Length: 79
Image (cartoon, rainbow, N blue to C red; front, side):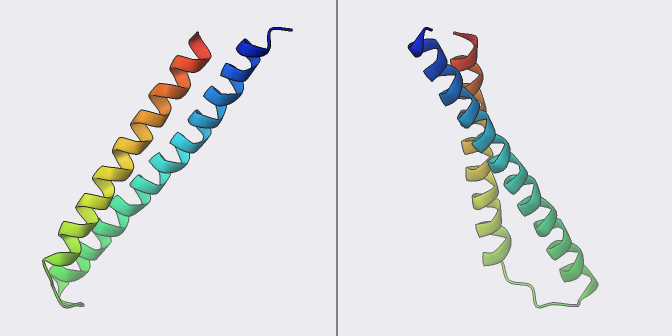
């Protein structure tokens, strides 16, 4: 058995697994931000600019991490 190929498949599979988790987390954060914005527009909560700015930064970082992990995972499996 070719251990290098098996190792790449395992590493690629784990990268895809964690990439999907990060993507799901980014989507969940985006939905949470949308709900927060709707509540702010309806006047049910106090509006502060720090919350949407920080949430947008976290969503962007999580999305980039998810993309990079998925790209690395697919590249490892294809080799």
